[in-house]
Image 1 (spheres, rainbow, N blue to C red):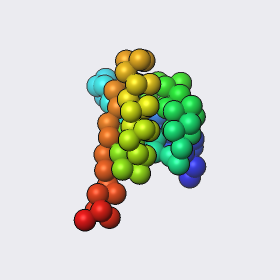
Image 2 (cartoon, helix red, strand yellow):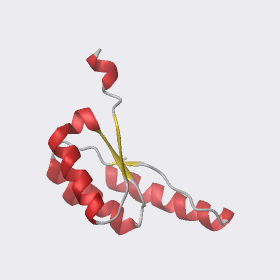
Image 3 (cartoon, one colour):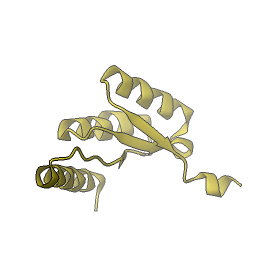
Image 4 (cartoon, rainbow, N blue to C red):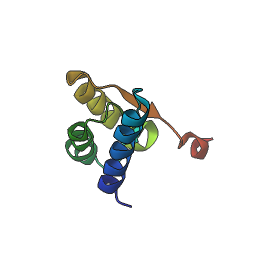
Length: 92
């Protein structure tokens, strides 16, 4: 499943669960990509278009520049972001 398909699938599941329960639901969409442009221009924008409230990315794989760029992008649009680092296991 490609990232666009995954994003759409998750967004549909979020909205379905919200409609069924009346509760606010969410999911941390993983926007990690090979380049800042891919993360920012394609994945973060697409998640916003779907109305998904939060995205995350792998801090180590994405790198410091990508982390800072994504944080500025999300902050300017009042969107929360989360950094995770599953790659840490490879670093030790």
